[in-house]
Image 1 (spheres, helix red, strand yellow):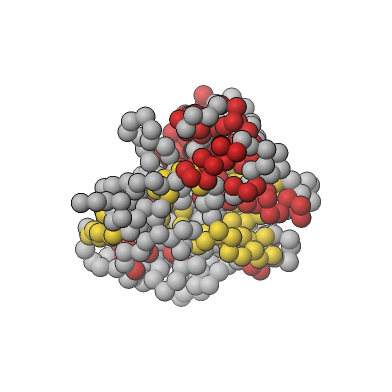
Image 2 (cartoon, helix red, strand yellow):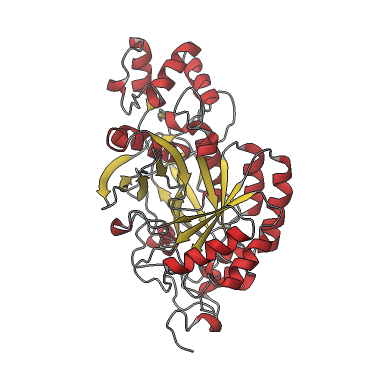
Length: 466
């Protein structure tokens, strides 16, 4: 059968650990809309669109993005192949690769990039020239016409075999404080959001997404309401930062920092996140300082260890509670990786990192995790871990059960931590009038991940009664 025109893609779905497990227990108050069967699969006849890794020298790991939609249930939730919590990337499996597909250049690190250029008969020096036009020299090219100064034959080869663009600009929304939310359309019609946050001190940060939606189902996060639609490729992650520099550097100044704190759990998409971070810090390209590229996680411990071993970039851990009881509720990943295990792992791993501090993020929820006792417990929990603590004002959103702690409460909490010897900062809302603030990204739609049962002692704090 000639497969140049029809490609069978086999997509396997299992149970979303943070949706289905909760949906069928008494702890769920709302149910997601998908079939009550633990395993189901769909076969789609759609052509893969772009290859993001070359395969000229034998079998290699190849990442493909495809414009497809199998079913509403399948597209709304990522359903891993067992009832456990997601550990890493379980993506789509393709039985065939298309003939003549173009390589998505922004999905290659520099070693792969150079190898690909040489495989087409061109010199390493030409690879470096192209790399700098994609990422450096204030060019940030996104189409062949922008590649000035390159050999004519080289440009012809690129037009035939390479794709420079991974995202399509959909809209830019500007908040009253100058924060920009950029909406990008993906090739499959899904939309992601990226935020650019200017700062008076000369630092501007781009907050990138790593997934469409998120499987973690953190109860205070708007993105978590979506469930997981799919992982982003390395190219789709990198291009968010490239677009931000190209579009907004003239308005907001040099973009100096990158945080993986947009849509998704970065460590659930560990392969593409580590590769994207590697591309972002390459000295010949975008040249972000590794200390200014921060990857945040809700606490996937095996991936956290891998990141600390393989990446030079900074780590942030979203903590948000000082007891397992509270964290099990507001961050269900804690049911697999308990606070003690997470923190002891950090304590041990950071012994081998010189001059390295993890950033603990702590979203302040009124009446839930902002008591004096919580502050004192937090001091004990982080003891022995080189760290900074970022207290974050909760940003309300549609359907949220939570309320932000008052400024006075946050200041009291900060002072207790500081007196206990912690390095602590306070982060207030930016961009919330355009739903661009921390925890506000995404568009859940009509089918949403479940809200979990509120522990009895917190029902009054949420105005739910007893």
